[in-house]
Length: 147
Picture (tube, rainbow, N blue to C red):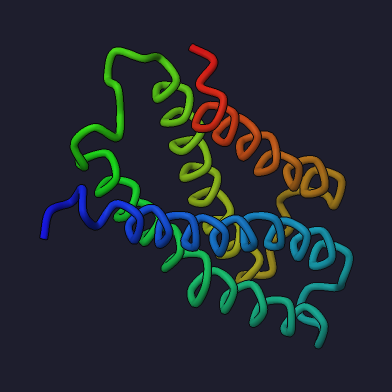
């Protein structure tokens, strides 16, 4: 079976993976907002550590990896990407920035695990908006293809 024949399945699995990944990208910084507000070493802090670790390891990491795999498969499918068009540069930039933000959030989880509070709740509230902005960029590039 060819990649072209599997295109609807690949695209569906890619979107499912992205939806799951984005759910975590929206939620993890919000957990950090709440985690910042509790005392290090408290029962609440320990609960947040468990929630953050499980969200990252059980949902976000596998979903991001799947999104990458299915996305690369889509790109390798003949006729899916017009390489002379410019929209895919914007989409790839957004996707790479989202992946970098994922890495940053994963590093922040390790800091919280050590009871370090490097940033304020306000910082995490602001950072919580970044995945939305990146998602808007990515969707507009893929659907509207403005250039």
